[in-house]
Image (tube, rainbow, N blue to C red):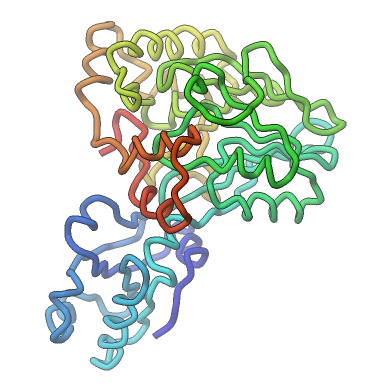
Length: 376
């Protein structure tokens, strides 16, 4: 029996390696959120059904494949993995840190080079489907849609020889706790937030408004905000280097953003349609769309990168090809997945109105992001 780290598991998934997962969490937890990957098979048998022995599982497990036992925190998976080894099975692993650790792991993926030597990275939170970004240029860095695990961002910038000068959120998030403000406080950076999403916040911020250009480094790489409401009233997209479009939770590779997480779906439908069908339609087809989330493992491209050409999305993304206003309204108000776990508490935390401790923050975030209309 060996431990498999979230990083090792991520590598297997991104390389489409064969893996069989035995998830021993309760069925309700499994149905809500599970590990997915191309080349990955998964079976759920609750831990309590295996307390008296693993005979029930043995006949259902393949021979010759790596078998990874998964639970919430790792304890139950170690117990079951030990029983499988004692029963004569080989290639048995348990997920180190369990689903909690899987939810928090970030995989840095290089998106591309920017002008005059800059770089753009996507930090893929593969267990939750969240995407953050870091721009590096001339010894400076900007972090966009930072996760609460701010040490990862600080260490990544340090490894690249850069000082974090700006942190930005494309909108007030409802699926995860933002680390942008805390990272800014820790590093002396400026924290930017769309003012229309900040009417109830309890802290100071720099208003992120259309027309402002935020320079990063000496190479004049600029982040140009574009007001793009619909997911929230303040949602703001960024054009970087006239080549990349960071779309926040407005547009994804296989779907579009949902307008209901502040309880105002009917009010924000028109804004969402205008952003997608007018604001974005007037942008260059050659912009590379980089969203703040992915909903399905099929959206992970080479090396784990999640991206698509804007013109291609207007061809094959179903959310961008709805002719009728009424049909669009029906789609984004009636065809919605369950809302993210504890999304109201997460919004309150991101406003500064709640201050959960670290363990409470982990619990609030457990589960998938569910920020898209088409996610199931």
